[in-house]
Length: 241
Image 1 (cartoon, helix red, strand yellow):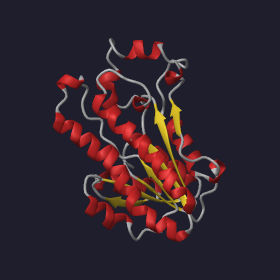
Image 2 (cartoon, helix red, strand yellow):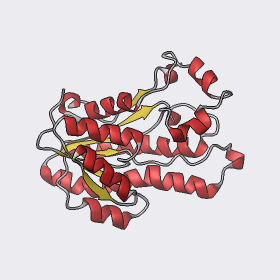
Image 3 (cartoon, one colour):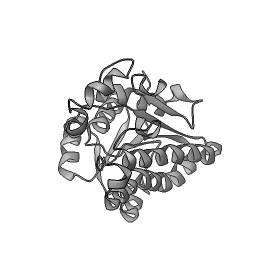
Image 4 (cartoon, helix red, strand yellow):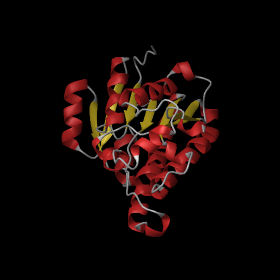
């Protein structure tokens, strides 16, 4: 198990299922965690449970991101904040929803990297993990907005790894399959959607939050010291078809 003692890590989207699981795992491995998100009450609850430090800010606001992260003594970042948007075909997409998905998932991740990178460079390095999706690797029906935003996240990962490697900063992304949360159940829980999807997955089951958090923490850690610029599918084999 990796030891994060003495290292500060920011996790955005910390009140979500994957974000909260990542916070708990990092705290359990000695990290000092800043829990970022838009829900102050949820952050306070998570802080009371785990000892993380709540850090409220809005991923759509560069000013709020800059103010929140600029003076933090960060070694690591997990960009987990995200928005699912809508299930729609390209011809039926609400472009305002598309813009919001891009603003939170792609633009928000880039802005966090933009404003944490100078401090990480000054301190001699660190590690960043972006939470992408299997929807960036294969076409999924109805996912034109979400998949596009996560494809952008993967490119942000690769370019950031290229640019920041000389500063000893590694940047990777993980590409999870569906975690059956209350939000995802609206679509993936449908009898005409879920069974057909799982039938194409070699492992044939939904992922848990902890099964996503564990690889995130691995990529963040020194155990992955020679890994940067990768997009790691955590998808039960779905994208190997």
